[in-house]
Image 1 (spheres, rainbow, N blue to C red):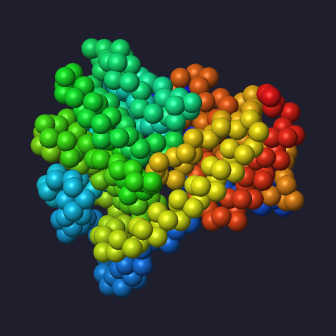
Image 2: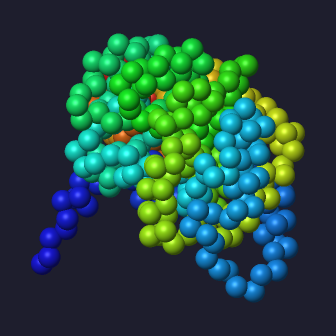
Length: 399
C-alpha cells in the first residue's frame, strides 16, 4: 500500500473542527448542540452584498485577474485609506480567504527550515500554514493571568536566531480577543527594523474593538514599508465566511511580485466572492456600530457568567468575538469531548474548542477552552448554564 507523505502526516487536525463527529453523534442522539467552537457569526451579511449577487446578470462565471478585480482593489484601497491605512490598489493582492494570503506570504518570505516567532495562544491554523510552507514556529507565550498581554520585547529578542525571518501577530487576537496598544506595536515594529525581519499582521478583526480600544494597522507605521505584510479578509468583518475572499497587502514591490507567482499558479480568487465583497464596502458605518453593540452585549454576558462559576477564570476580551477561559479540569480535549458524549442539561450541550490546539508549546492550554460568542444572548446564557452544570459532574475536575 502506498505511503502518505511526511508533510501530510505532520499536518495537524483542526482543534476547532476535530470534535465535529462527536457533535454530530450528540445531535443524532437528540441533543441540541450549542456551537461556541467556531467563529461563524450569526450576524446578517450586508444587504448590499447579497443584492449584488442576486442582481448580477453575467452568463459566464469567468476567471478574475490573478491579483483580483481592479474595481474591487481600487475601492478596497479607498476603504483602507479612510481608516488611516495609506495603501494604493497596487499594494493589494486578492486571495482565496485570509488563509491563502498567509500561505502565499510565508512561502514568499521564508525558506523551508526558517523560523517565525508568534505570540501564543494563536489561531490554530497557523500551525498548518507553517507546515505547508516548511516553516518552523517559535512561540513566545502570553499568559491568561496577564490577560494575554503581548510578551515583552526582551522575550521576543531572546528567541531570535539566524533562522528567524519573521514575526506574526493577530490584532485583535484570535483566540484571545486581545487588542495590542499602539505603544506595544511601536516597540514591536522597532524591534523588527533592528533585526530586519518581516512583520505579518493578521488584521481580520480590526473593526471589532470595544471599550475605546483601537487596533492600529502595522501598515500605518512609517519606515516599515519593506517589512510589513497585512493579512485581511471579509469573512468576519462582513459575516461572509463562505465568500472566501481575503487580501495580502504590502508596499514591498519585490515581495508582491513573488506573491503574484503563486497567485497566477492558482489562477484567480473567487469571482462571485469578489462581487459580494466589493458591494459590501457600500455598507454604512451603522452596520458596524450595530454589530459591535451586539458583540459587546454578548461578551459582557459571557465573561460575567463564566467568571461567576467557581474555579473559572475568563479575561475580558478587548476585541474580536472570542474568549479564552481557564477551567478547573484535567484536560481540555477530554472535557470538550466528554461534554458532547456524556453530558446534557435538559437536552442541551455545548461544543467548545480545546485551547491546547492554539498553542505550539506542548502541554500549554491544557486547562483552557476557546469560546466564540457568535450566538444571541438566550443561547449564550444556556451555554453558560451547561458549562457550570458540566463542571459539577465532570470526573476530571481538578478542584
